[in-house]
Length: 466
Image (cartoon, rainbow, N blue to C red; front, side):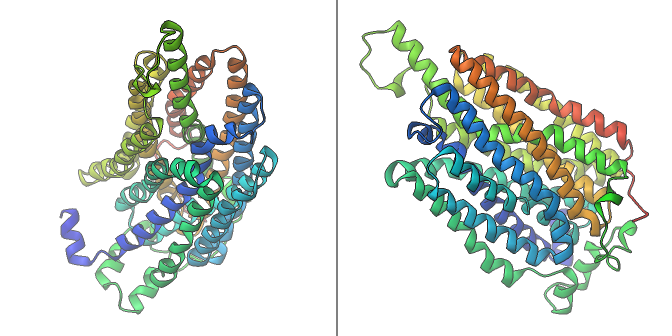
């Protein structure tokens, strides 16, 4: 039976829930993305100091303040959401990060930016544990990666749209208003969330969904007891005894930092490529009086960022579709998941060519980075789904929080490495070498993560004794 036939026969309310999670994730990345887009403007305004080399280091510290707080938040968020429930937990998280995003407008140096950035990181930690728990509650296993891919594409939509209006707001109204207006968007979501969201059981009793859709949502035989035990609490000390937890932990630790790097440094990399090409062209053509945009190789970096994340959106949705296709063809769930993830792990190797290709035309670098970001989103849709594949629903948010913490810890290490590398090579006037070294890590991280996860959980067996 086709996807559309299933929806016509049993109902499609679960996709309304997926749409709510998609919108929340989009808002999450609206707020998260503003800093990277405004880095050139903030640097020119002296927010990160006057010295160009030190600006790279101070900026990395601001990024790290977000990631440290995000890691701390992840240690709490999953447990908090499992305890208080999906509806209230998600709402509190979004309310918190919206006000933290607006608070950036009050910051005027690296230290105060770091404080507000930490507040944003701590509160934004609630998004993915809540989102993953919502999908586990509302979708059967065969649809979870697809639903996760759809809501996770919100990270791309947020990253696509913000470059198109955030720099404009900052240039015309001031950078403070960029943070205020973007932060305020999330408050709209709360109205729809409180009006629409409830558990499948509550929606069934209210007559909002059909019995057929409810039964389809709970059609996985190995999860039949999850409903009765949904409110039981599982301590971290127990979860950390399972190889399944460590597989997810290490998979996120190795691959999340790649996305962090693109999010916070891609605008600066592309802007820097423009600066380098303008500098080289002026040296070769000292009498040039035209506009910079006409110099060969110079691109609109804001449009380039939007293009990268547009390509990523395709990867996010396709990432959930491929394992579903494998499963429909009769492949076991774990084998379908791992086969798809192996394919996605190979694609980012193309980013090893980014710096080299950028010497010829920056758009070539943009395209391979876009391809790598698409692969990351496809990978992300599936690594999130491995949690609900391997754990009962009562532990999904907690395990997601553990993995999110691991990803943030990896991001802290990469941010520090990026700050030190780029400071060093900026001082040598060879910043492109620093970026080339960082792209090496971005290329190989997924293959390493896939190998580690394969060794720890070769068949991704479900935990049955929780």
